[in-house]
Every structure is written in C-alpha cells, then in structure tokens.
Image (cartoon, rainbow, N blue to C red; front, top):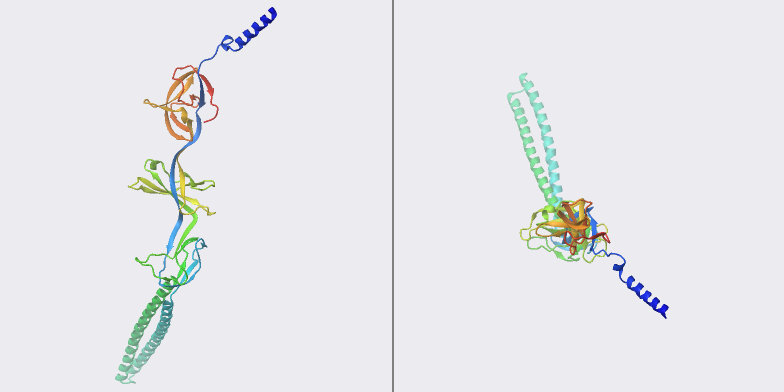
Length: 392
C-alpha cells in the first residue's frame, strides 16, 4: 500500500509541473507584431468611370433627288464597302431631260464645228484678197489697170478681214453655247448620280428605313428622314468623362482598361487617344476618347462600359502596405521596430494603388514597418517582431 501511495503522489506532481510552464521556463509576454519592408513597385493613379461605346464613323444617308425606289440591295447587319450601291432611285423625268440636253449639246457642237470651218474659210479668203491686192498695186504702177480696179481690190481685202471678225464672233458664241449645254448635261448627270445611294465607307448597315416602291423626297430642312444609317465599327470610340480634379494628370497615351457591362470576356486594353482640351461648364468634366481596334466585331456601338484610366504612372516607386500608413493631426506616419520597441516615423506619401502606398520621403527600403498600424502597440512598447504571413 505504501508503494502505491508514493506512485500516485509522483504522478500528480508530474502532471502539475507539466501543466505549469512558468514552473519550467520564463514566458515572453511581449506582444507579437507583423512587420514588412518597403518595396519598389510601379504605382499609378487610377480613375474608375463609366463610358459609352460608339462607332468610329456613323452617318445617315439621305436622298438628294426625289423619286421612287426601284431597288433596295441591303438590309440591317449587312457589311458594305465604300462606294457600294445600297439603293437606286428611279427618276425617269430627269433621265428624259438628260437625253434632251445631250441632243442639244450635240447640236451646239455641230454649230461650233461649222463656225470654226467658216473662220478657216474666211481667213483663207483674206490671204487670197491680200495677194490679189498686191498684184493690182503692181499693175497700177505699170499703168496697166484703171484706178477704180485698185480701189475694188482694197475694198475686197477689207471686206474679207471683216468677214473673219464676224466668223470669229460666231465661233465664240457657238463655243459659249456648247459650254452652257455641257454644263447643263453635267448638272443633270450629277443629280442622276445621286439616284444611286452608295456607302461612304466600309461598314455595317445599322438602319434601313425604306422599301422598294417607296416615294422618297430630296432631303430639305423640313424632310430629314434618312434612308439608311451606316456605321464603321472596325474601330470603336469609347467616350468617358474625366472630372476636373483628375484632368491635370491625364495625358494622351495613358493606359485604359475597358470592360463592357455584361461582357464575360477578357477586358479590352487601349490608350487615351484624344480629349477635348475643354471642360463642360455644367458638369466640370472633360470628354475623353479611347480608340479600340475591333477586328472581330465583338464590341457594338451603344454598349455601356466601365473604364479604368491609369494616369501618373510611376515605375520603381518605394511603397509600403497601405494598411501600415497612419494619419493624425501631425501628419502621415508608420510604426517601425527599433531594438525590439515600437517607434513612430513620420513619412511623406504619394499615390495609393493596389493596396500599396507610395512613400516619397522619410523612409528607407531597409526600414521594417508594422502592418497593420491599427491595433499596434503604442510607441516605446517592447514587441516581438515577426515577418508578415503573406505579402501585401
């Protein structure tokens, strides 16, 4: 029985000592803090905004002449090439007028040819009369002809020269008539060319508002209904508005990530192509455009999208986790660990991007910072520093 009692006492004593570490070793009561070091990464100033997608070119096609549509060759969704005929307007009255004007032009041209031949004939007659006058003068000197014969030769020469002037005037008049008739024909031909509605550029028919047999009127200030709408969508314009505070940081060529709403695919990446260089006085925003190539035609005009503009890109910026940066009435600061004690260090900060804050002054890359600063012990407190469990 004595041996059993001793064994029980030994077991109890062993369990008591095992359950009381303070009995075996001194416990470190300093609070544990996670630390990280500054890293150089690229940070950018990001602006999230909404945008609208539009065709690179969008035009309504109107009738220039009045008539009935004899042919409609395209429908919505059809791809067209520049110069392709989309519809034909029948204008028989104008075609008849063109035939008459062409006949008039032929007649005027024949009259001009006759006038030109008359000029040549009269010039030849002048040469003949001058030669005759010269011979008569020689005969008169030899006293072989009477004075009245010489006078007649002078008169004939003068008449021949006058006839040339009349013929040249007739030729000029005939030429003017030809030019006028030709201009009339050209005008009618130009108007008839408008009877064919053609695509102004490569694109897609977005609207068709007519059918064969429709009577269409020449577009005027009171008649503005188009026949077709054609859009160029091989490149899409993305329109967004940049607030006044961000305008000074916007530059041509800034990276832009465009994600259309409801689009499950990969976001589209482009750059700022142009902006208006002026702010809307009502909204204080500046219209900004991003051109996106659209060879697969996955983007459509009228889509709504979310745009992320990357402005003020700063490569190799010294950064710390954003959670490590605190702000109070004195300024911005981080907590560091020096000789296993918390120390406050004032810093200057720049951009915050993707969970990291740029440090522009007051901190070196080798200085450890406590993250997060919220809940960290106050400066001067002894601590146990430990590396962060995961990178921030």
